[in-house]
Length: 56
Image (tube, rainbow, N blue to C red; front, side, top):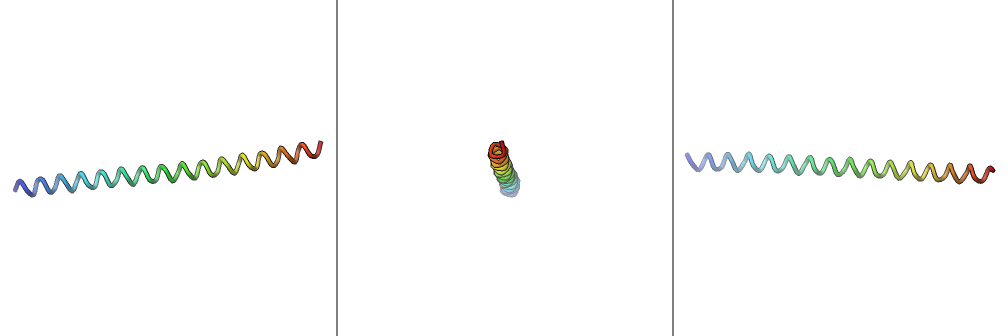
């Protein structure tokens, strides 16, 4: 009986840790996507600034 309780606690602990890792990975992927979008916007803004300066 005690062994079953220990096993159940171990399984629950494993599942909680696995979920935390999965959430952290998703957060990291989201941050990478945001950074990539920001870099694209900055690059586009620089190109537009360069074009605007050339027209003057």
